[in-house]
Image: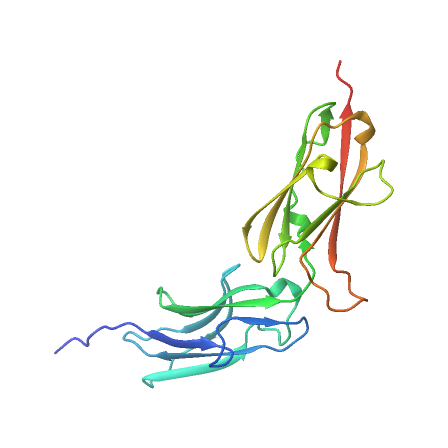
Length: 221
């Protein structure tokens, strides 16, 4: 008895249309994608997967045909939300055979409050205060404003305002580090930080994300 030859499943196509590999759309839209494959031996289930969190959105038995395909909502919910931005893949289960695309939902940035690492808010006068935030954004951050307890209006975050901003990470999840230099007792209180990413869709929709944090500056003894 001859053993049957083994050969891999091959993902041949994964996209919304034949003209586009990456998708940019609005919130509350339906986005369907097509995955096509050539079956291998042994056969593998074909998965639609969110590569941000490794969540399996859909799984299909490849059947007995030599080729197969499915067309499904990329989010699995039927409509898009701001948190859906990221990489998606059509994968042959248990292998590294896959094709990926990016889905970008046009939305203002969002602070992921569960990921905020505020560190120690009690500081000595004259020291630097550093704060780290995690942000969800479909585009790079284009502006940052900061309002301290002594400010009437938010000010652009620059060296002139004793503020330094560093953005790291890869879209759609970015890490924002804010450093306020040479703090004084007058800086104690609640601060407001707002960021934007160039989103301007409707006047009724805020185009910035805002978060509050607190400083407690102690006089040196």
